[in-house]
Length: 202
Image (tube, rainbow, N blue to C red; front, side, top):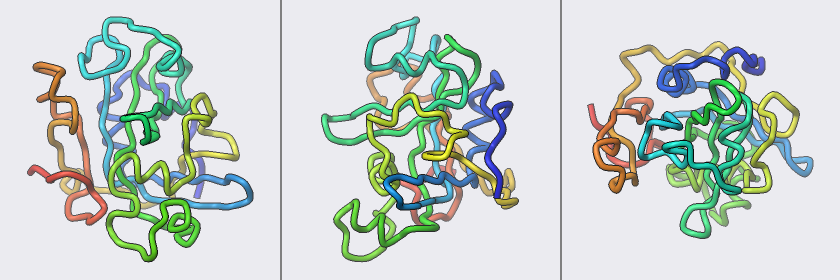
């Protein structure tokens, strides 16, 4: 298994990156505990022109500052005052494109994930949905700005590749107020995987 190179994140096409992240593995090594999961669902956000993005129109605040960082940096924000959502920053510095990691298939450290989420046994809810995925991995707002090629949190590939026919696409979830942008088909998921959130659309 090897970490994704910086060039993977530096590309201008965030939609393609969101698709290609399907099947990659997120690894966290926090407080002496290692956990990992295969990415099975993502959402792409085109920073400046996407009304569903936190940085639409060049909006820049303390909350979304890490969206403007260089590629390969984590952007983590809190939703509904409780869910920590993990995003991957792409493109170039000051171009705030990002990919939200919506769901994972657990691989390593499942007992640790269960403890972090307060669950008794593994089922599809463990890492289904962006809040659950980040919680299981131990990722919180404090990790926003982390280099995803470092040792604490990184994304790697193990040779497993999802064929194009196995990746579904649909509109994104929870962005209904974004007008026409709410209907953009920028959500990608691994077809048939039980950890995928929402209702898969063919």
